[in-house]
Length: 220
Image (tube, rainbow, N blue to C red; front, side, top):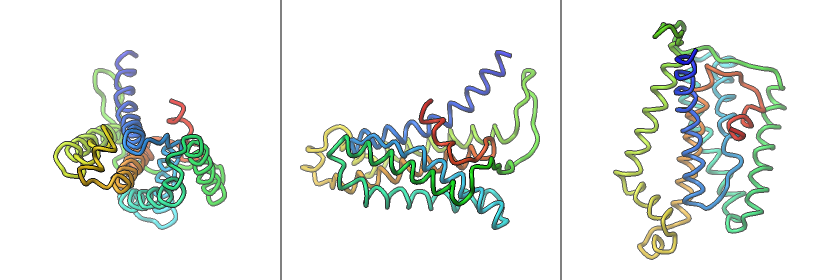
């Protein structure tokens, strides 16, 4: 029982970490509390479901399509709706809540409120110290660790990563050093939404897809 809790916690914790880091990145760089962050995780899950069940492609194809689509959607909605009001905290909070509810209602209108599912990439399971672990759970855990490692390399070893870290520490100094703070904020939002999309991609075979699924990680 204890081992089962540990293994489940590791798997769930790795995916929640992707969402939490994306949320923190946007808050640190753009100084906004993006309540709609987990709504993009929900949209990614529905994109993968649509490509898999309605278009008949493999879930991997759905992931390759869903993550870029959600990332682009997130950047566009930020640029149009959030960037003009980002200096007004209350307006941003209300705006991102409204955006999350709008995305939820669009998915509800298109797919209804029925519970959906996506088949695992690899069916089956193995047993470790008496605990049944599905191959999909292992894939999810490894993929989450890989994405976290890639994000660390991006932030620590690239010019964009340097710009993100500099802007997070001091926006005014970053601007004086020639960094376009608004552009860095937009790129950071893109990375953040991509992390939400990746989370939806790796979690969708393990969870129920429904329009209100974005609320669970937000509350957690």
